[in-house]
Amino acid sequence: MEKEYLIKKWLNNDLNPQEQKAFDELEESAFYKEILAEGKRFKNQNSTNVIPFEELNKQLKPKSTQKKNWVYTLSKVAAVVAICFGVYFFMFQNNKVEYNTELAQHQDIVLPDDSEVVLNEKSTLIFNKKSWKNEKKLHLKGEAFFKVTKGQRFDVITDQGIVTVLGTEFDVVSRNNIFNVICYEGLVSVTYQNKEVKLPPGHAFKVIDGKTDEYSIALSEPQWLHDMSVFKDAPLSEVLKTLEKEYDIKIKAVGVNTNILFTGAFEHGNIENSLKAITETLHLTYEIEAKGLVVIKNAKD
Image (cartoon, rainbow, N blue to C red; front, side):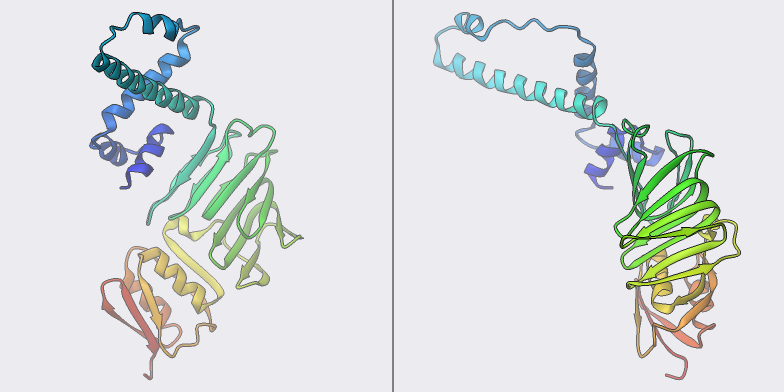
């Protein structure tokens, strides 16, 4: 795991047991813990009496080597104090909360208003805890399922559009050229390119490569919560991108029309079964040529 990633999650007190073990094994972990303790100590002090530098200077012996050592020591102390205050500022003043998931990982999140979020794999969710009461906004990259507490309202901001909700259950996807919003309960308002679309339960809005579409669904919640991916009239290109993301692979379509539509599903956890579920439905074939590379062709080729 990346050092910066572990440190950031440690400062947010958000390490899982595996990540905590990895953090404790870092060479600098003891140093960071000491700095944090110092930061808290600074916070709890009501006043600090510092001897004037001129008075300290008078107490120094006139030897040049001692002066050099004093300057070096003073520089080290100043650096540690600066780091302590920096950590204090991060811990006690910065209220931005960030969640990140890795491949094949889901994360349950409870928002300050008790609304619930399930963050799908390889996704990021950011919000400001301090300003939540006055400005309820979340920033999402990837996919998440929301269960909003009755009477609560907030905005989910993505790179492609804004989703405004009021006591509802909905799913948002914002990845690359795909933007998809599904309402399962309540009412969802989607703002895309300055146009507003309102979705009642069982309705969805999607954008793929700039093309918008509204459609109906019969599901009560997203199937990725149950480790499944479900599609209805989805371009093969979208399905293959989902496969690539799910299994961290690269798929090469040779002589295949990736605009053909696919309706169906595949279970997660077994790449062979997933590939069969898609290719057999569309009369295609596949071949795993090397680790991380799959080639898909027409069955007749």
